[in-house]
Image (cartoon, rainbow, N blue to C red; front, top):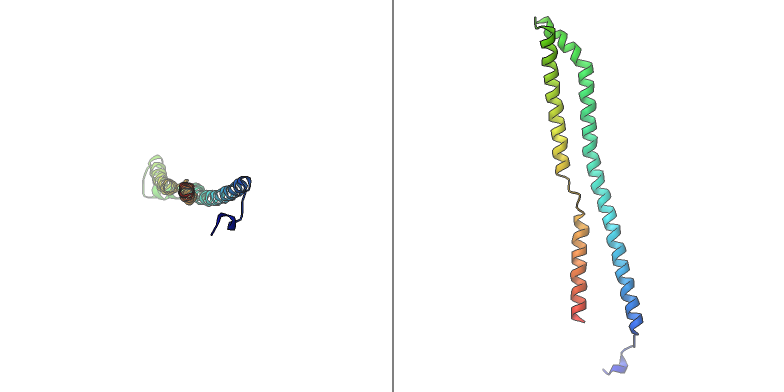
Length: 134
């Protein structure tokens, strides 16, 4: 095959093609980043929803059962102040457990867009190989 058998492509055309391909690659990575961050945000939203639910349950428990429990302990002869303190301590312990569970779930959620980072690394490796091979 002689050099005249190959179609001639200008440097400007090659450069334009490279820019278009890199631009498309960049747009694809940005789209993946957006999708992955949205996924991470919804995961965090679920954990925050659990925190809110824990607070609501705690408030309902305090309002609905605290007075009845205090009166119940008073029926067994416990002083009203001690009965209220005992019920408050139990409810506070329940609230603490719920918040600890929610915080643990939040800590396990990584905000790093891992798939996008892996793709960018792979793309950089391919670009490096192509530029060194040419």
